[in-house]
Each structure stands twice: as structure tokens, then as C-alpha cells.
Image (cartoon, rainbow, N blue to C red; front, side, top):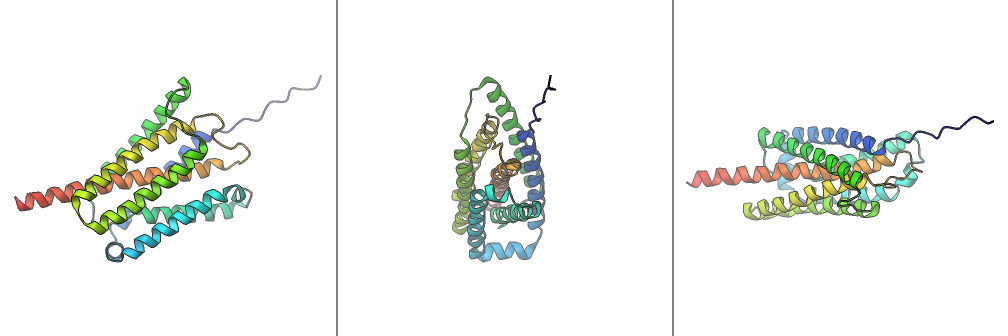
Length: 242
């Protein structure tokens, strides 16, 4: 009798995706914390509006190309994949950061806490939905498309709101973007738990999904920062006039 062949152990793509996403999120938040301390960068981004539009355009094109050619990149050497991922990560991180005003450390750390809280809620909801096979799911294609759309909407919306310089419109817009991002982060987490969501023929497919998940989580974190900053700025103005 021939010996039994044990099937190869399948990797935990969801767990690897969360690990990569958290690593990218920590790096992005550290960069955002450093960026608000650089006065020259803050002045450049607040006074030169074409800088923000250019960063948004480069980020949008980079994300589109990264997603479209990822099946080709997956076959390339590791350093090619690393450089392509690093470029996409930095382009998207710099595009979503717009430190027009300097947020307080309290608002920034509250935003970080709420972001990881939503990350945990998404994990719990996804686990429950996968177990009961009921919930708000989306196909892989829709997840990829809506990840890019919501990130582009949030990034471009922040630039437009900053141009208006009206606290009422800015606060309302930030609340809408935050609500959309909160909802989609949870749906994204539930969709990842579905069978055949990850492509088994691509070993590093979880890195691509992690990049997309990071986009939405970092946009959510920055939405929290901007919303809290707008509230505190408006509150101080009201107290000043009173």
C-alpha cells in the first residue's frame, strides 16, 4: 500500500491580512503624527493646493495600477513586489494626510483608539457572519472597487472642504465620510471571511487585500482626526465670541 499523502496545510490568509494591515496602519499613523509637527510641510499643503491635488492624482493612479497588475507583480522577485507595495503605501498615506490645522494629541490618540476599535468590531462581526453564514457580504471584485472609490471620495472630499474653509460644511462632510468608512470597514472584514475570497493561486494575495484594507482604515483614522479637529476648532471659536 502506498503511504497516505497529507494535503498541504492552507495558510491563514485572513490572519496574515490583519497582521500586514496592522503593521501598515501603525506606520501610517506614525507618519501622520510626525507630519503634523513639521511646520514647513503643513504650510506647503495648506497654501499650495495643487500639491494636495497632485498627491491625490498620483495616489489614485498608483492604487489602480497596483491592483490591475498585481497578478503580474506576484510572479516577480520579492524586491520588486516590495518596492511596488512601498510606493503605493507611501503615495496613499501622503495623499490622505492634509494637516491644515494642527490637531491636539488627545484628538489624534482618540482617533487611533476608535480606528482599532472598529478593526476589532469588524473582526468580531466577520467571525459571527462567517459562522452563521448571514451578514453584509460583498464579492471580491466589489470590495476592491469600493475600497478605491471610498478612499478617493474621502481624499478628494477633504481637499474640497479645505478649500471652502467653512466649518459647518467641513464638519458635516467629515461626519458623512466617517460614517461611510465605518460601515465599509465592517463589510470588508465580513467579506474576507467568505470562502474563495482570496486567490489560492497567488501566494501573496493577502498583501494586496491588506493594502486595500489599510487604505480604508487609514482614511477612517484621518476622518476621525479631522472631525475632532473641526469640532474643537469650532468650539474654541464659539467660546471666543461668547
